[in-house]
Length: 349
Image (cartoon, rainbow, N blue to C red; front, side, top):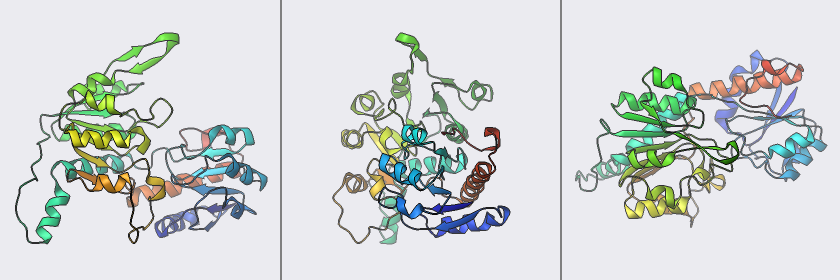
């Protein structure tokens, strides 16, 4: 089986090459070029393609070109499917596989790291000391022990962060449409917010009670039509003054302009952002030589904001897991294996 890996960097090449000997039936070629409708032609002669979260496979033309070259498998070396036009893939008979949980702890640890860095102004203090400025003005933060954490989305990543918050001595409130009661039994989550029954058997989570009580809010929900801009002006207005806000999920879960207004008003006392709405143009690119007029640049100008470039997953352990799961899925497809031999959160075909 021949697979073309799009949008690869040296670390992708290294991590996949290390495990490739365990998959002798698979051949890989790497290209730094990202997957779009313009570059889909490069897949000619391959059996499958592999892409990352910053690819553009939402464009139906991209999928049509891939299908025209006989591509029947798209391997996403990430957890989400939001970079893929799933209905079109299904229509064209293209199977899409993901890596459902390559390192929940890595992402949870990074969420707490950037939340605490913003809260305690670690980045500002570091830069001051480098310039022999040892003043403390403007660096005051809050102690997390005894505070309340609101974790939105308590899957593997959210649950890992709940455990970290408990280690800090925090009271943990979980919010999930499908609450994991085992987390209550383990003492990892102190309570889940209520699920409200709506019309036509609809259900939604009572986020308002979490917003009103949480001193620290972290997003780990999936991005879909319902969760798009779930953090907006209305949601922020219901939060406690000075809340620590963290997003390592998806940028579009939060309205960037609303986040800026929340920071300026003092509603958001500190923000740690690993993802943001306009990241696709920037993520994994060196744009240091450019003058960029963007909301990203504005967010970076705030002393109580720490931003990183979608790197929450980026550990050696996570890269190894991504490589093994991706190639396991490729092998299962090549062998016409039943669904239970894939590693996936969802398979589309």
